[in-house]
Amino acid sequence: MTPANPAMELTDAPDDEFKVDVHNGLAQSPKRIPSKYFYDARGSELFEQICEQPEYYLTRTELEVLQKNASDIAAAIGPRAVLVEYGSGAGIKTRLLLDAMSEPVGYVPVEISTSALSASVESLAEEFPDVDMLPVAADFTQPVDLPSPEQDAQRTVIFFPGSTLGNFEQRDAIGLLRTMCIEMGANGSAIVGIDLKKDTAILEAAYNDAAGVTRDFTLNLLTRINRELDGDFDLAQFEHRARYNALAGRIETHIVSRIDQTASVGGERHAFAEGEAMLVEYSCKYSQEEFASMAAKAGLRVVRTWMDPERWFAVQMLERA
Image 1 (cartoon, rainbow, N blue to C red):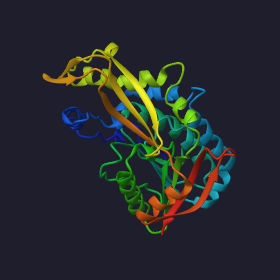
Image 2 (cartoon, rainbow, N blue to C red; image 1 turned 90 degrees about the vertical axis):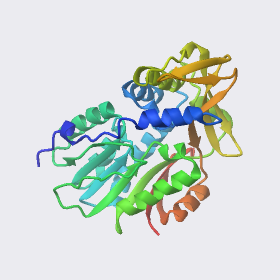
Image 3 (cartoon, one colour; image 1 turned 135 degrees about the horizontal axis):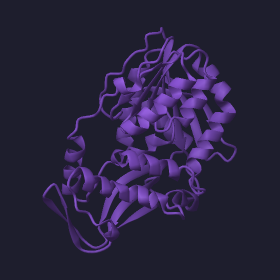
Image 4 (cartoon, rainbow, N blue to C red; image 1 turned 90 degrees about the horizontal axis):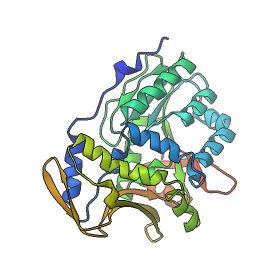
């Protein structure tokens, strides 16, 4: 089958969602803005650069796990599956999985960044001409109607790599796992990447690289607000901060005001005190037992686990309990 033109399939999230979430987040105390808004075109580029930094072990470790176990994972998935990926990004890990799978019939990436989505799907369509490419430009945390491939699929597999599940508070993470449980169907499965708990120094270094790429990535959120929502944030007066909260088991990333100041967004003024921290991301780390408990609350069970030798990162296969 000839793949559909990726650009024809894109469906964007509501235009005003970003505006509403930013205004609501700045009105809270403490202030917070959802991390999903990092990923405009520039943010997506910076994240790809983050993945190349020596301190950022997550991507290379997960890639190592997928490369070494691709055949085993594909065998566990089975033939003629449709792959649904949340937050597809550049599609590097997707390529590994599709290449190993037996007769995959469809690929449904759900990605908020239209530019990243178009680029990855166009590339994958050339490499996998027999796979129906059905990209959806949307926020996967919200209800979305997923297209079905024209070819008959034997099962649906949700692919959620990159430890992105860790960006959600536990209640929301369980809710997302429940959504997976519904979308995979009775005989489906989910392949989920999770970052495991480890030494604090290793964790904090991953989110504070020496080259400052993660800092630029974080502060690009303010650049996006300035550009798209008529903001006037002075980036020189804000800084990136990422620290590990051992009690909560997560990296907490904030944008911190260097001085007492105000910033305008769409004509509304917002005051920032010196040292005031605005939460922009959680990156939760799990033990295998903690993740299995979360999955159980969503009606799922862990059936297979693949890890690197250092046991820093795990790729888990989930099925309905």
